[in-house]
Each structure stands twice: as C-alpha cells, then as structure tokens.
Length: 244
Image 1 (cartoon, rainbow, N blue to C red):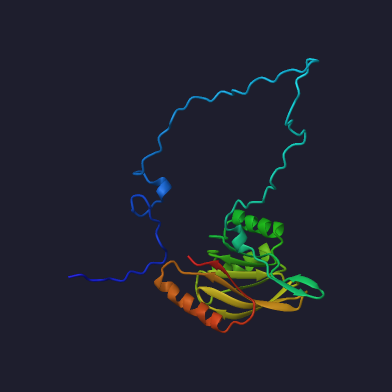
Image 2: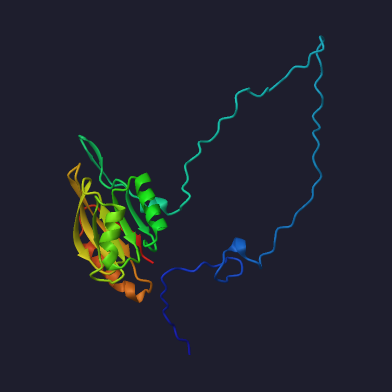
C-alpha cells in the first residue's frame, strides 16, 4: 500500500546535484571525481626576428601606450553581510527637497547588555553610525535594572520595551526625541509595532521590531500578528529584527 505523506519544513535543505544527497553542494561533494591535470609542452614564440632597415634601425609596431590601462572602479564592500539589512533608509520627495525619514534606523540582537564591554560597543556603534532610532534584542537585563542602564547609556533618549509581556524584556526600542516621536501601537512578546513621526519633515512611517521565538510552533502567533498588521497597512511600513 502506497501512502502519500505531506511534509512541511521552514527552509529547503541544500542538495548535491552530483550524488543527490542532502547537507552539501556539488563543489563540496567528496564523491565527485577531481579534474585531471594535463601536462602540455610550452609553446615557444616562433615570431621571426624583425629586419633592420638600411640605417640599422628596427621599426617598432603596435607600441603599447605609456598610459596605464584603465582600472575598474572598486566597489565598497561590507565586512558584515547583514549590515545593509539592518540599516535602512526611506525617503520622501517633495518640491522642497528630500527628507530622510529613516535616518540611520538600526536593530541589533546584542545577546546580553549587562557587561560593560557590550555597553561600550553599543555606545560606540551608535555614535559612529549616528543612529537616531534603535531596536535592541535579547538584552538579558532584569526589569529592575532597566532604568539604570538606560540612563547610563543614553540619558537624553526615550525608551520603551515589552517587559510587561515577557520577563526577559526581549525587545527594547530607544530613540532621539529631537529627531523622532514614537507612538507604540501594539506590543506582544515577539514584536513591538509603532508609528514613527519624523520631526523635521513632519512625515511619518510605521515600524515593527521583531524578535521571534526559537520554535516554529511558538512563531505562529507572530506571523498571525504580522498578517493582521499588513492587512490594515496602506502607508510606508518597515519590519526589522530577528525572526529566528
């Protein structure tokens, strides 16, 4: 008896095109025969020597230019492949100019913010990148220490979190009040959805910080909440974070 069983998985595993096994790609396949090396004799230049003219000079043809060959422009690369994903820019164009609404908005799964070296790394990063709105995930800070650490790191910033829904405070959001005004619209254990007003341009956009649970069954509520937000969203909206 043949039974057809449906299988669902979160991601498609890699498969080797040579041995048809999972877990590796064809270039890394050990069963694939290695290419053989062939030794060939070196082809000597058989161009006949140039003949001299009556005065003993040898004419030069196809002389190379003294100018160096043009080089292709070197494109900037990021050492962190995810750096371009965690800093985004949303622009609004008008007759008066272009306003950068999401001016250096960031999100970092910092995996612990109790240690002084982590706090210093965060402070340096946000100063160098001129971050104006930041999401912090997995801070591992107890709720009683939130105010102390927040004031220690950025005393002039505003903060919000979801400690009231999860004792580990999985999502922190901080912003510069002179640049942004943030209005929290919805909060769960896995997301913090807000409306962000850009003070200079007097425009706004919507931003959702996400930190999903580790297990797929626990993330069902997260996807349901995101779908509900999407069904009612008709303006600029960005989702940023760690979906696990």
